[in-house]
Length: 289
Image (cartoon, rainbow, N blue to C red):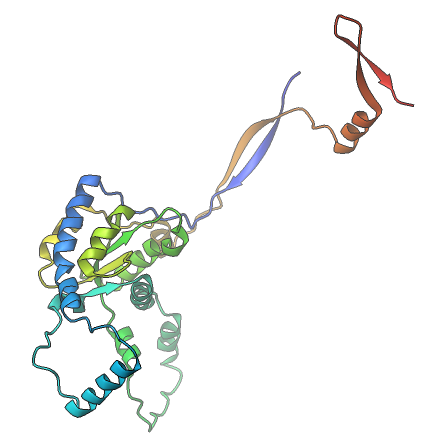
């Protein structure tokens, strides 16, 4: 029996998934050593300056009274945190917030373009008498931080949590064209205990290194030499502003024999039954009355 053929039409989405940069296991091991040596002072400071655990309400009351007596005086044995601690961001939420603020700056603003066109025909608005003080959030948006590298311990079972990072890293790097692009470094999940011990934290999956971090030159140089930039072809096509016609792929496939209907199969099963006859294991179909 000749197989029938049919044409299947297929469309490709322009927003393809962005690939993560691939790193060899040898380079991952070297990056782990450099990263742990860089962040280990943070863990040592946390170990030496961790307050003692509370022993009850009486201990809490005594500490509160001692704090009131000192009248906000710092103790002499307090050690300031290491300088690198202000150049490290830990946690997916904090890193995503920073990347989103940079991506907003790199995004073209259509309202500003419309305002520039209407400046010749409309009069400028009167200045407001009230002056609003800039908040801390506005300062962060005005001067977004640039990350040199973001280290991610990828988990195969939690891909939805960090699948947005490649797109955000690529768009946030556009806000700083005079600086090298942010590198997204994926590390095995088995490196987690080593990094947690260096930071003295129970769990760490995301670490971002700010641009200009002290004592991080060797790590940043190695990462930029062995980790590729994130490329988004569809974003470059949008910027070119060229018309791209719809691309339809036509695939010719073969179809199998028609499937038997469920009602017909059920009727045959209920009406006919097989009964063995004789010694030669022959069967005959007997119709039920």
